[in-house]
Amino acid sequence: MATATEHTLSLWQDHSPTQPETALTESLRTDVCIIGAGIAGLTTAYLLAKEGRGVVVIDQASPGGGETGRTTAHLASAIDDRYAMLLRRIGREKASLAGESHRAAIDFIESTSHAENIECSFRRLDGYLFAGENRDAERLEREFEAARECGQRVDWVESPGGLGFLGRCLRFPHQAQFNPLDYLRGLREAVERFGGRVYGNTRVLEIEEHDHNIVRTDRDVMVRAPHVVVAANTPFNDRVTMHTKLFPYQTYAIAATVPAGTVPAALYWDDLDPYHYVRLTDATPGFETLIVGGEDHKTGQQPHPNPAFENLERWARERFPQLGTVTHQWSGEVLETMDGLASIGRNPGSRAHVWIATGDSGMGMTHGTIAGMLLSDLIVGRDNPWREVFEPSRVPPAGLGEMAKENLNVARQYFDWAKPSGNAEREPAALRPGEGCVFQRGLHKVAIHRDGDGTLHERSAVCPHLGCIVEWNETEHTWDCPCHGSRFEAKGEVIHGPSPVNLASVPPG
Image (tube, rainbow, N blue to C red):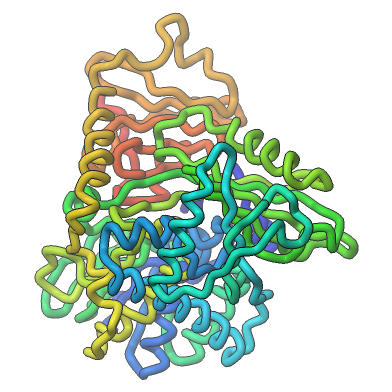
């Protein structure tokens, strides 16, 4: 069973190796079945289990093996897509509630780590938003006014910590950081202590919607539950509706050593698009680790992403000349939305109680925590002031232009069917170990990869979700769908939806 993109490891995954997981081996009945054991799924499970609800969590790998383990773990109420944009697209009232929800999520992580004795290196610190190269200073002025209007604490500072490249920038106090996998481990222990059950190495294939929904798995066992939560980063249970409003992007991160005390502990973000984000974490005595992220692009639309790491390192060394050896590099998948806010609530079109949490928009740790807080309220029948803000069926009129642009981009990817595949002067036999390419074989597009042992592996290059042609990702050694972000490991096993199944075998002929 593929656990995630296996060619790179994040700093957290490297220091928190996965443990053998207990798979689901018998059919069960419960109150709530949660699909996905990342921060959204386990936060939901924790809150429901505390209230005495029966909870079963299923993950295709192990807790944190997906996108939670590949985050840079900023905890911020300074919205990634900026308050100035929120004001334009959803208005002051909802923008203020969005900011409130992210502040509450940070408070929740802090209080839960204390209450459950979770040692996860949680730390409060300031966040700084600064102007990128050739950026108009008025952008920060507008963001300052918008953040204030939405109730955020923010002020102006000049080159804090002696970091001259920051210049005059915005300070957002009382932000935070933590170790996401340490937190998830403690959260899982708390879920199980309250009677919840967590199973790994079990893939959900489909959800049959009834009064008691049936969750079918690849192990010929099922879970029956009146409530089902899909918290697998992307809603694989929805074929079209949600995916016209979710836009998959690949984002990159590096970790490198710096001498201890030479970079002030804080969160740093520039205002470029895509933007850069920076934080510190502990390392060995005398050294700390600087984590730098950015270089985002549409998933599956950059077949040669290796320069992303080089660009991040170059950007970091220009601003932090004390940067030492790069120890880790990794990527993750971010699902953007029309308004920069997650979709959390009842799955549009579902006849039963099927709930979703998706569209992290680069703020997965706080959005995932918000999901747990909001969904647990909705499931037990409590009102929640954030319900309309994150309603999955929403279509903000001011976001229709973004939606049209992104879906036009998707439509263009289908032209890959008409393009010749591979290299006319090259045959599959010429692939070097670790290489992959899509080739034309008669009427079929074939995804061919040569592994480290020299063996060729062939699968259909057609994504099972909606028929786009996958692209080889030479950095993560995955097949990535350029339409809706499905990802498959080199031999074709699905590791990220919305496709619920593997790449098909190559048809004969």
